[in-house]
Length: 542
Image (cartoon, rainbow, N blue to C red):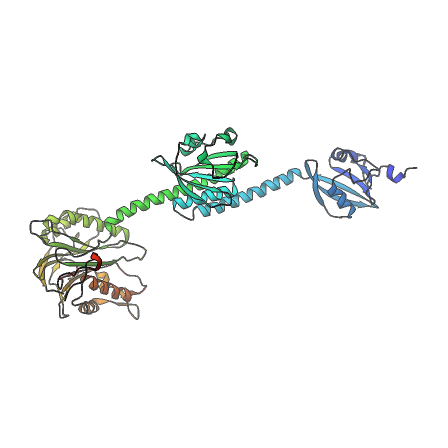
């Protein structure tokens, strides 16, 4: 005779007739693991389950294990294609298991976790991509990240005007490889459009077997899925991204293709910024070359040397400048040296410096008449809206036998210093008014003869007004400068400017300072010796 406890449905205490039709699956099992009762939802979930049958073999294994262990907490697991949370309610010698469907909740939780991971990845990717303004480096980072997180391999192409495309390929787990591809983008459907910035072609429309060989990395194997997406830039396309998956992996889903486009937007922005930066750097270098101080050497038998230090260590140009121009007039071999100091510092002063140097170069045919040259330059500056002025010193140098004949004219500038062979220091007797302030200027020239080994030093006020020293507030001053110049008697021009520049720099240390420039004109002590190996200027004889 059957046991009534095993054949009579048991209803949990407090249950109502509506329990059987409850939308939540529920079943009652006794301590021996035999089902006493279950509602309609549980029957649909576990078709093999029935009152009097054991849990084992009729319901999910995870639920059998939880009941057998006497678990009094919530347990979770899959049943069919759904995911449930089982809540145990003990009563007497039995337990009622209520199974709440958490499939949608779990899916939403998993989707949220994926989105959080993707958001974190995109944030990290943006930081990595923007960590360098070098285009090649940006392409390498983009290819590596795409291969690691989006596909099995990635190809990043940059646009070109020469028919040879800069490219970077990377396989998951490998290192990016740069190359240049002479290809027809139309061989891969969607690539030509992507390089022009058009929307991507859905992956399902692309036949992986039609992918050309230049797309595939070496030993990649059969391709299962291909994604081609543009890399949008700032106003113009930055290139295209090709993602590849092997044949044994699932194809790209719409969600994954959308995520690839989000990544491509960041990669394209970084590549575009790198390209703009490279263009600006190229333009800056081109313009900078015209503003940088020239490299000086012997010209017409006269030694010239200069040193320049801008006010800010991170800059290369400023308001101080010097130039040496060879003779272009019928007067022969007379060269013109110019040293100037524009009011202000930094880029604005450097721009005006460039204008002045260009104007002086145009006025070189008049270099024989210093006053006329300065007067024309003054009129040019007075006709502009720029209220800044410039101080100048001109020095025309001509070799005569063993001596150098100088004609020096100052225009609001400190007079040059002349160091004689015996160490005596003199000031050039030249004065003049500022350039760019008054409609008429005054100037007074001085004629100087340099014997072999003697030097005329032109300098800007950044040297004498440099503050520093032991207490940090004393100016370098004219007396220290004269003493330093006196110690440079019979030195080559290069050595003179190097010593003066070094002493002024040591004086200021790391403190703020103005632009500093020095230019030395020296009468050589003798003929050049042949340089060792035939290179360089050699040394002077005594």
